[in-house]
Length: 124
View 1 (cartoon, one colour):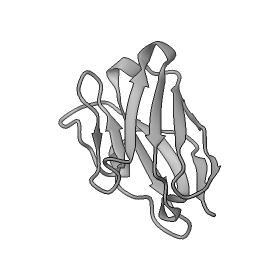
View 2: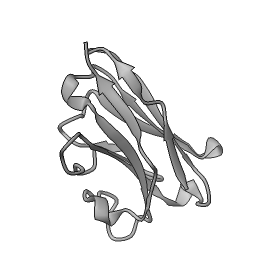
View 3: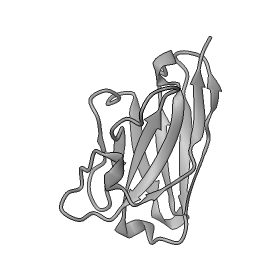
């Protein structure tokens, strides 16, 4: 089970930190991807991947503004989002993937376990 939290409303330029608490899985064995789905749009490809035993990765579209980290002891993965823009408004999801074949899985259908999402709204 994955449970996201930390969403909310923030002004442009603000910051939020999302949390993804993982249970029922050994987090140390899994990569965790962060995705988002804006209103009326399909779920985007992965934003950032927290890669077990390797450096995290973020897509060009958010690199430099978003960072991802994990605390295996707390079974939690974090998405730190800075310099937020109105176009970042979406439901944000975390998802777990057993790291077979590649650590850089981009598509939502490559991830096995999903959280329910947390809403992020960026508006003045």
